[in-house]
Amino acid sequence: MHIKKIFFMLAIAFLILSIFIFNFATSNASTRVVYTYATHDYSNDNYSYNSFVKNKSNINYVITFTYGIDENGNLYGTEDNTVKDEALKNNIIPLLLIHNMKGGTFDNTLIHAVLNNEKSRNNLINKIVEAILDGGYKGVNIDFENIGYNDRQNYNQFLADLKSKLASYNLILTVAIPALTADRPNSSWAGGFDYRAISKIVDKVILMGYDEHWSGGESGPIASYQWIKNVAQYAISTIDKDKIVMGLPAYGYDWSQVGTTSVTEDKVINLINTYGGNAMWDNTSKEPYYIYYKDGIRHTVWFENSYSFKLKLDYLSSVGIDNISFWKLGFENEDFWSAIEGGTGDYFGDIFASWGRDDINEMAKLKYVSGYDDGTFRPNSYITRAEFITLLLRVKGIKEEPGIGFWDTKYSFAKDAIATAKKLGIVNGYSDGSFRPDNKITREEIAAVIAKAYGYKPFAESNFTDISNSYAKNDIIALSNMGILSGYDNYHFMPYNNATRVEATAILYRVLNK
Image (cartoon, rainbow, N blue to C red; front, top):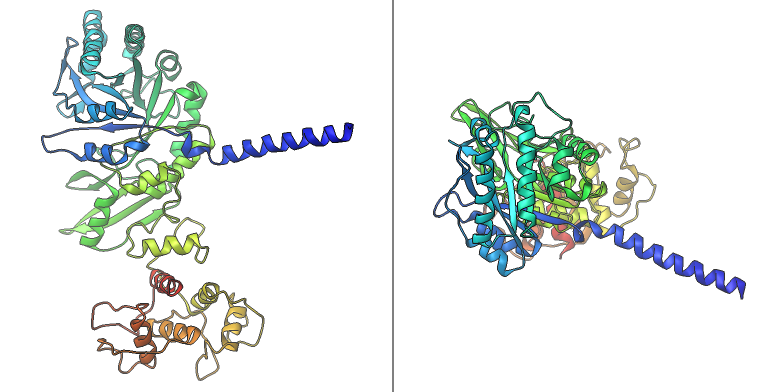
């Protein structure tokens, strides 16, 4: 009986542990609380609203960029009710945003005047509460920026007095404050923000984890991975963790000598399609960038994409920060939401603008292709003969076996794959008995190898006018008939062009689906 009891208790303990492990492993997305910002900058500006409606099932709080202030603590601005009303209908908590912008920038003189005048502060508090109650909001987000150290005490007093007033109506107080890695009392922009003191007053602290490099400065990452880690660690050391909301960017900047403009991931794709080139991945910052020239002027673009966004989300979850925000609704695309939901998203940081993005992701998901140590796939790099044969055997499910290959494959990483392919009659090599494993494989060679591996034969004519002299003419036609290969247009296949990694991946993904 004693042994049975011990066994029963161990079984129960194992069951509880299993449940805990399972829940922990899948909790990142399910426990994530999402705060979003919505703007309405002009009469036909529906970007935030449309995004909100489309993604409302993933949103817990929505903050509407609503009112500015004057020196006397009065509010000004036009309230747009569309997002708030939609939020209330869907049990999403709407918060009113109050800012100190003037003339297109956060005004230090303005906020100093209000914070240093008790009458203005009290008037502002009353106006805020009145606006919340009249509008049907559930609380407020205070977005006062550009506050110096000399206003720190009065800023904290303002928050404490506002919190006291809001508490009597059971309303929420949140603040948006600069992302810091240490207290910066000497900063004219961020000296007024005491993380510890603010944490003791408000309900939530939204850290604006963006503009590490800003529009008015030098080009660089918008929110590098290590910077976000440093911000998070400082926040955890000074703010109650359950009060931390990490704000992330869904945008970037395009810097040039003629000025700086904001961009989104989709805008960068349009730029690439217009001006050519490729976006690159910077593994130090873990953020993509793109360089192009317009009218002879160099443009440097750093931006957030869904891959860099997800890396940050995963890190935040690993340290127990499950409250997140981003600036702003309408800047993001559906891949950002996939990342928020816990989806895989892109497997690599440099494929978001590639025409074969979906094929690469599917092949990575199936574990047929992998990338480089720096998180890239390098879709437009060329693929070698050795690499392609290895990939082909993997896709076909053929086990590599040691054997007799070619005289120049003895030291190749793919020597067994090449020997196996030779034994099966998939490859023949060159007339001098070589295979040339490190040569870039051409499009006609890919056609020949696949046709041999799968036994494809042509069954219709081809419109290609540039394959008549290709040794793989019939193979090209066969794969074209099957819908596996396509040309650069209806008449040109370019058989002698070297194949890129994305081309090889897309072709083999089509083979898999035949």
